[in-house]
Length: 227
Image 1: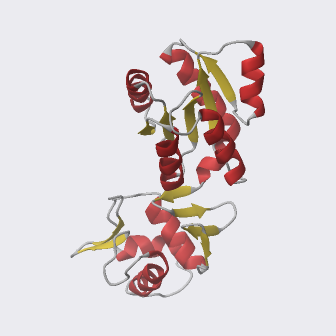
Image 2 (image 1 turned 180 degrees about the vertical axis):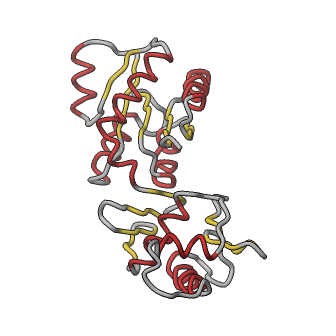
Image 3 (image 1 turned 45 degrees about the vertical axis):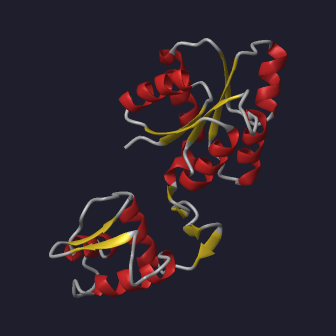
């Protein structure tokens, strides 16, 4: 599955056209139509790339780009879109932290080439998994929930990463056990997974007794629910 891209563009026709091309290439797509909504969706979904119009209502593209780049060391790539095409404008956009700058009008095919190029340079960010305030960073071995770091065991971390990486896919206890004990390093009962899931829910669910993230599929196993 390709990375998720957030389009922040107040011209809905342009936004929808970009969305169609991205979706056709297999990217996940989120759309915002002003700077404030762009900030909200960025914090909620933590996309790998932003395609960001410079002139936005409520919060400018400049402000949003600056926020994104300062908010995290693992900031996503940013492609700035603007009708301003002078060298000075391009340099200004790049100094804000944008990874690329495209002048309107542009061809969707050209934009897709720029998307691929920026993701090649910033792709390490996309190794992390994010969903509704929950972030798993495999390179750092960290898990964050709504800006607070969680303390997970090695098994809990691997279990959570695997399930988030396969959202909405149901796994049996035996399949999950194989993921955290891949070499049969111990004679462990499949029901051990239940204990790991129970502890994990206490850490990542708002209400562990009514889980919304890791849900039980009766008679089958468990899945990480995206909705």
